[in-house]
Image 1 (spheres, rainbow, N blue to C red):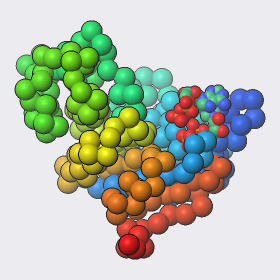
Image 2: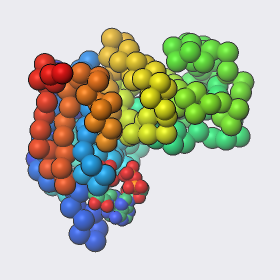
Image 3: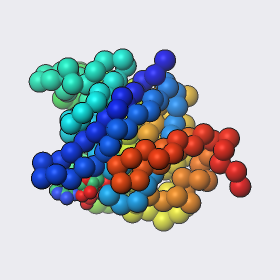
Length: 228
Ligand code: ADP
Ligand code: ADP
């Protein structure tokens, strides 16, 4: 059963920039895949259409078989619980602790304090930050900050996690750690879609790869075709 489907999706920004042209693909539940391409190829735009930061100009994005065009108003917040987002610059709140940053989505959902504390503790353990709950983001290393961003993105147990250049600011060792963390998510029921222009990193992961070039989906490479 597909969790996500793009049907002939095009995106033209106001001012005329054509960011995506007629893009179609689908992602099955439990899949992990990459989208790659040069800067400006349309990777960020593709992710933004999934978490409703942008809307397509033509075509349809379906999530859990539901056309996202119909998701409006209050339903946008509900949709965003089902799609976790990780940014390159992690976007943590500087004046909140690690635990507060991670618990924020649950607080906004109206969960009780005790329940939030329990779930935050569990997710921080999963990203190996169990001992850093009361630290402020500035007291953490870059890799730790990114793991907090991931914890915040998965604390609502989303059906899909989208990550935009999540290792762009990290050295190769930390990048590999973050990738291993992503790889562990599908077995817990979260599909993962990672945008990265780092082809070497993407190839090492041996997952399915969507290749964008100037807004067109020019390749959809299956893991078994990624030869040495
Ligand atoms: P990538 O993430 O692969 O670098 P983007 O999706 O950010 O690509 O950008 C695709 C194209 O759309 C680029 O030409 C970019 O300049 C343009 N673009 C992105 N965002 C906007 C925007 N908000 N307004 C106008 N053009 C944009
Ligand atoms: P990314 O590579 O992650 O898309 P950028 O630095 O290209 O990051 O873009 C940063 C922000 O500026 C994004 O929100 C994007 O939508 C917007 N943007 C990108 N290109 C353009 C553009 N040509 N005109 C207006 N906004 C743009």
